[in-house]
Image (cartoon, rainbow, N blue to C red; front, side):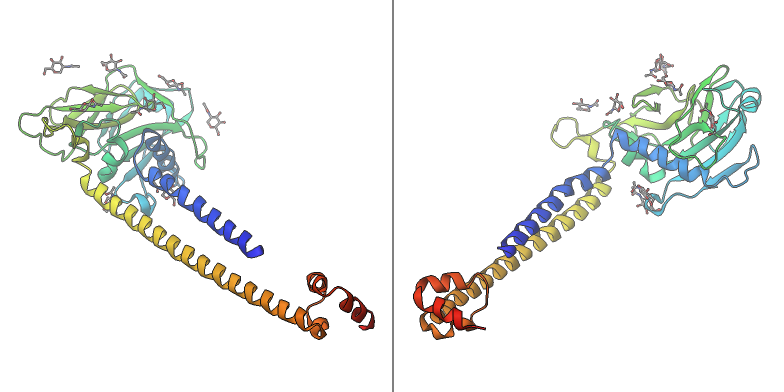
Length: 317
Ligand SMILES: *[C@@H]1O[C@H](CO)[C@@H](O)[C@H](O)[C@H]1NC(C)=O
Ligand SMILES: *[C@@H]1O[C@H](CO)[C@@H](O)[C@H](O)[C@H]1NC(C)=O
Ligand SMILES: *[C@@H]1O[C@H](CO)[C@@H](O)[C@H](O)[C@H]1NC(C)=O
Ligand SMILES: *[C@@H]1O[C@H](CO)[C@@H](O)[C@H](O)[C@H]1NC(C)=O
Ligand SMILES: *[C@@H]1O[C@H](CO)[C@@H](O)[C@H](O)[C@H]1NC(C)=O
Ligand SMILES: *[C@@H]1O[C@H](CO)[C@@H](O)[C@H](O)[C@H]1NC(C)=O
Ligand SMILES: *[C@@H]1O[C@H](CO)[C@@H](O)[C@H](O)[C@H]1NC(C)=O
Ligand SMILES: *[C@@H]1O[C@H](CO)[C@@H](O)[C@H](O)[C@H]1NC(C)=O
């Protein structure tokens, strides 16, 4: 009885575990929401670089090891100084005077992100038919009063004068016949294209993520293998193999446990059968009744030989 219940429990636990696998997979694939979760994480890690920061100095941050390849930095400023003077050079960004942050805060922190080889992981889903020629760069502003704050909401940046310019260094060359364009991803999940100006420079009038893309020139007549996969094929294959290894080992483990359970169940049944046979034999013998375990087992044994055991029981100590 107890054994069967615990087997049922085991199967239930395994089913639950098995059921949770797709979620593990979903988390590792890129979605709109995951880029925002990344922003939150990177805000936290960029702020950690601000230990007694000097206003106006750029501090490079360190990302957790599961995100190696991403570069971050933080720059703390007074809102007033940002508006009056701008920032001449902050990595690839040049911020002219006139930048406004709303709602108003006395001090703000500009968090810089360079997603490096993670760019397509986090932003390809939003632009399936484009290839990134440069890493995705982010410029996000946060309340800079409390430097240990996490889960901060971004401030809105708007330019009142000249736009922010972003000079992409080492962008991949544009493929023959293709046109490269600047792209802006805003924080609400939409994007916008603009023209590139001289020297791989894009301009921006708000906060967000920026890159240079070109329309993928996939094998257009074939509709089945969409060009979406081209840039991230390697990563996909790698993660596919990981998923298969996981699924394979889980299935193997599951099969093993099922076999083990069957074996245990079979052994238990065999034992019970043997025990019952023995009990029957003992009941037949009659004399040996008081040797059988006390308690409930007496009842079935007694039913077979109704008169004798009750008498004998009276003798018993
Ligand atoms: C990376 O690691 C950090 C800290 O260990 C964790 O909070 C975060 O969820 C992880 N992110 C990803 C994308 O795995
Ligand atoms: C990016 O490169 C780093 C090593 O420089 C590596 O650890 C990481 O897995 C790469 N990320 C992706 C998404 O390929
Ligand atoms: C991408 O291209 C395919 C075919 O070229 C088209 O069917 C699809 O709608 C495009 N997707 C987007 C988001 O533009
Ligand atoms: C900025 O943070 C400080 C300290 O946490 C808080 O007092 C202030 O209200 C915040 N400002 C805004 C506009 O959220
Ligand atoms: C920033 O602007 C967006 C839309 O432009 C708006 O939805 C959001 O509420 C604004 N955020 C703040 C903190 O003002
Ligand atoms: C991203 O999320 C926003 C809302 O959070 C939604 O409006 C937008 O359509 C989403 N974009 C994509 C490409 O899923
Ligand atoms: C895209 O850019 C154009 C031109 O600058 C602008 O009119 C439009 O509002 C922008 N759209 C979004 C979603 O940012
Ligand atoms: C981009 O440049 C093309 C020509 O090179 C021009 O026709 C188009 O209007 C420009 N778009 C914007 C938003 O400036």
